[in-house]
Length: 329
Image 1 (cartoon, rainbow, N blue to C red):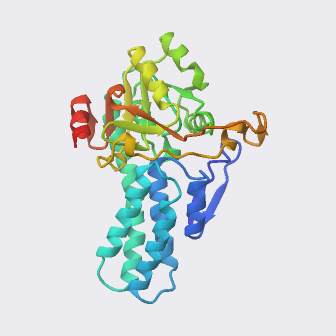
Image 2 (cartoon, one colour):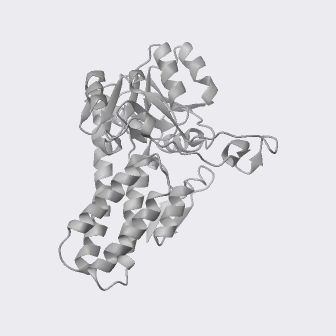
Image 3 (cartoon, rainbow, N blue to C red):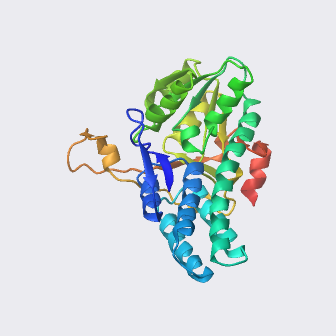
């Protein structure tokens, strides 16, 4: 089985959930018990690992069919984050290329999922070291949503940059925007930073312009769910932060592993997930809007690359001139 923290319960409860099959994994991703592009990808890989490990098939061909069926179920959970599809495709490629019978195939699939989990931690740490070069002693970093250890296997992408800077002895503080409507910034970012003793101040999403205008923000570092040829797709509200950062002359950085980069698409071709109206009309179980009101609830928005000062990856920092070449592919 795969064991996860149910992130919908945080910060009030730490609840561990056992995922025993593909259906459990798909539900956990769809219901955002597991979230964050890198973690979604690795969890999906383990979902395929569960199929391989528990399969009763005696023939290699039958197990491959089981894996293909499970892969289709997992692909339909969340459409925007590219890591989901990257992870599934990587595991399935490994499965098809593995020689031998059913046992060898099953072992290869499970091993690939484990390898991806280990790689994620290593990638995040490398990304953090590169990103720390952009953070100065005494900086206050504003971040949006949650791109920390809870969004990855461990360490984090955007918050990995903060962690790496702190490990280098720099004095760094964080401002976290609440991130309506699911409140990942308030619930998750503040939870993990406070747990780890990292100074954090919570603001509402509508306070971003104010704190920037008062000179309270030195850098912005966010994560990404997909970096396409002309834009960054990330949690709804990221575009607002980027526009305000440019207006106030504040560097806007995106921390994203290369697995999140998708040179095959432009922003016009990307699918933006539309989630349940209840996320907007309710705060948890409490309804805050009148019955019958129309609701628009895109989970992500699109930030054009001209608002991005650099993309931090595990292979280095991509500055505008490199991003332009990426956009031209």
